[in-house]
Image (tube, rainbow, N blue to C red; front, top):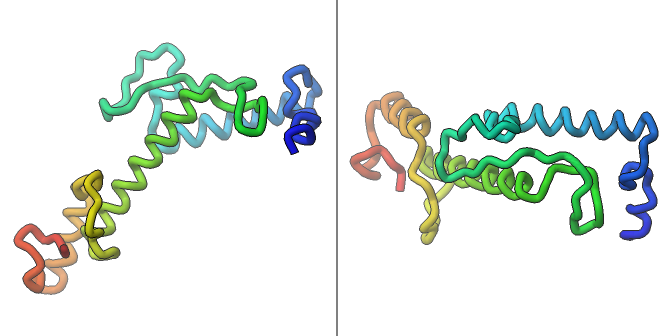
Length: 147
């Protein structure tokens, strides 16, 4: 399989065919638009002057180019940027789950030590839910949490 992937022209660094160069440019544009949609402008600032709002995150340039992957050399973002983006997506996923638990969409897991607290938006929505049903929390907690 690896040999087949390497034979594709878009996977060869030496390929300068016009359509391959355009395909790479489009991939870069999609990557930048996606990062921008998440509001991670620090990853788009090659000068390093834009800091991320969350101090637990690190800032790395996207570093488009040929990088080694499990499938061999590929035109993609650099390993540090890939790792940071995956970490940020994982954090967003954990926060979304914590918010959904708070809103009663999931049962609270028996053990989940790393689960973040519900966001301010989830707390506001939960209060609105309670107000809509007459403020009754059915004895599920003084702060409005279901579990």
